[in-house]
Image (tube, rainbow, N blue to C red; front, top):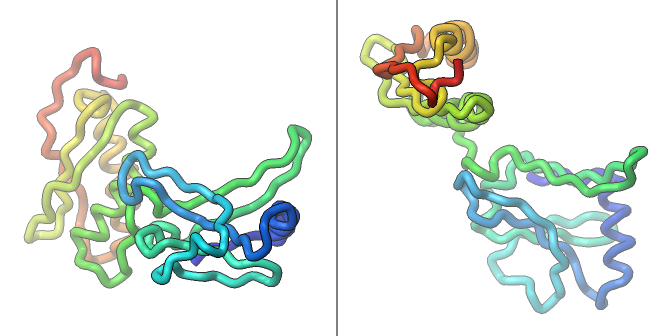
Length: 192
């Protein structure tokens, strides 16, 4: 579930030595499954452990996760990195904003997850976004673009060379391609 590097474990041990006996750490997600999701790590005194908490035991301490945060912390990694700029604890939780779907989930859910987790973060850098509207009976994912993507001169490249190519690679024979249902209108909102 959560990977904590050796250097991060050593860092936590040093911090916990300065706390009350029995104190552990808690890893959590505030606003899980939303665009405003934030991950964090805090001290967890022994009397703050809830019965439904999940305990992950390490050699010198335990990490606790509340049941609501658990699915959003799948594949999370905590590391402690030291470089010329100093030291810092890093927490990467790729599923914090969006709960990961199972490999055998319905096709619509898997494509929707791919759009939200992989495509939209890239489009957001250009002020754009896209939404999966439907999957046609003949195997095409129909997308609606908004924001900076609406009217962008590069939309065909984004759809065919980007999203469609990746989806076919990921989904294989389950998907034939991507169709753009957007009525594109150029304007100040357009990225290009």
